[in-house]
Length: 604
Image 1 (spheres, rainbow, N blue to C red):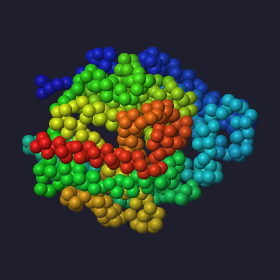
Image 2: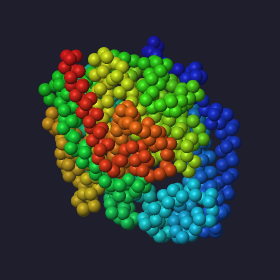
Image 3: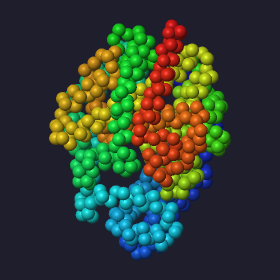
Image 4: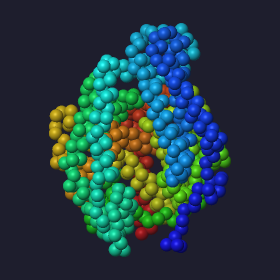
């Protein structure tokens, strides 16, 4: 083991490969100074309570106070969480992060009175304030957004009762999480070398990509043997959670749990139904892709445990970080000079923490606050996948940069519904660039499959989850008992419908619903599929140089939350209330599937 490669310690990294957090706070003392300032300011918040009906100036001052304390805590929190993530073993920054998290909770508690008090005022008084005080105009959409919830706000006493029951409503989700992540004990299996492996959630994901089929099958059956033992418990936790959603929707006067969940972002329910309809119509494309996987793996029978193993091996091309930077700049040229200037700034001004070091948080993300750079965490290793990760996170960061530099703080963020569109558009642009420039059939095949596999996992699979999620809510609302047998039977049919006739109906897969945490997220997963579809449509418009396509796209990136998400996307050139953007994404999938089918024939 002495010859094994060790991760470097944080202190040994080249400074240019780390993010520059001194632009957030010069040092930890500056962080502490800001922490103390905000702590003192929180003591003054109470005096604003009960003043919203005391005239337009008091109303304006309360809004400014609210936004000011949130603006301060966000910077404090971001500094602490980035410092902690760069080395999670560092006790100093563990403590800093704990302090910031605690202060965030204190801020939320201190201003919790604001929305209920605002909702208690009548419209004439509120809009009279706006007519009287021009400085309030900037906050019109902000206030409208809160007031839109008024039909669903109950009396103060009822709201207090619901708030007091929040832990009860979340109990089923908490139980699922503890059972799934802490209490379940999975078997030990043997890998292809006869080595014993303790099965865990993370190890399972890796084993599903193992090229040895026996290992995949053993892992698959071992994992589901455990879920099989607890299926009735999982049915109970999921059923109780769904009942909580339906109950809260009913008491808040929403027609359904889905209507309640989508209302916060003003997403019409038709967006959800359109996604299900269009994806179901195009399931034969997924069936073709699955059949191609079966052929390339040279299997007589294709099982669900064969869905994630590489069908084309490793990419025969790798990029160092420096090469990836140049490739990203070249690939993203269609995004225009204004966009590229921000990308260059990210590279030159140390927004990116590149190298994996001891204790560093795994994975990759884009994070920041309104008053900081939109920093990117990476754990770089030379590969094509890391190039994709880099342009993906860069999409988030450029989106954040444009939003924060074109919107006031009150609208300086964007909803989850919009978030993945910017990152995935970049991935689409990169894919097109690689297909235009790479002539090696094996590299082209790898790039095509990378796209198709991402499409399968994001549009098809997440829509399958969305269809199941809506089914269980509507069935519960009708009074149907959500027993394990009922859930498993439906899920088995749904899985067979999505993956088609070339996949064996493994009995284990009917229990997949037991292990999906997203079913406890309350109508969340559909946004992955709508976002990927919108990104595909937008990339095509930009690459096709449609009139104003790039200008419209930049307008979306700069809009933040200044308008409702659906309206922001209309300005970008995609009407997500209509099916066309998903149809357009399916055309791209089909064209790339056609090419991959031809390529693998030529490669042999």
